[in-house]
Image 1 (tube, rainbow, N blue to C red):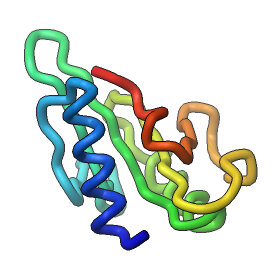
Image 2 (image 1 turned 90 degrees about the vertical axis):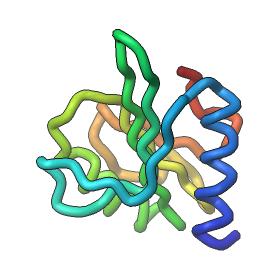
Image 3 (image 1 turned 45 degrees about the vertical axis):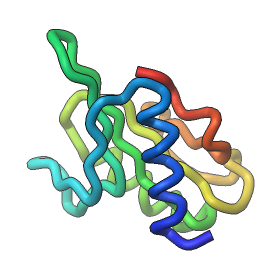
Image 4 (image 1 turned 90 degrees about the horizontal axis):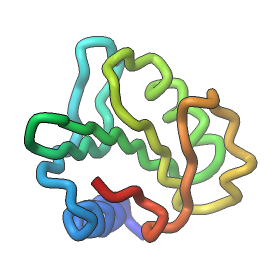
Amino acid sequence: MEFDDVRDKLTITLKQKGWKNVDYSKRFASSSGTIDLVASTGGFRKKVLMIAIGANPFDAGIAGLLLSAITEKGEKIIFLQEGNPNEVQITSDISVIANIEDLPGS
């Protein structure tokens, strides 16, 4: 599946799960690159979800390095398009999912 198609499906699912705002290619002050998707809730207790899309375990490992460098608070997830999530080498504060249904709700 093409990157834009994956990103669009993730966006639809996030909105269905209660995330109010979804931004594409967002850069954080502490980041050395852009994050594919950033979802947030509104209101007093704002939650942030950062998602990097990895085509395969190697690509996801590189995305994990980008996510791990971000110091802003929020949940960090790698969406793996193909391959086994257990093959991705990442730090413990980052989750790897391969099914869109596994995205957390707000």
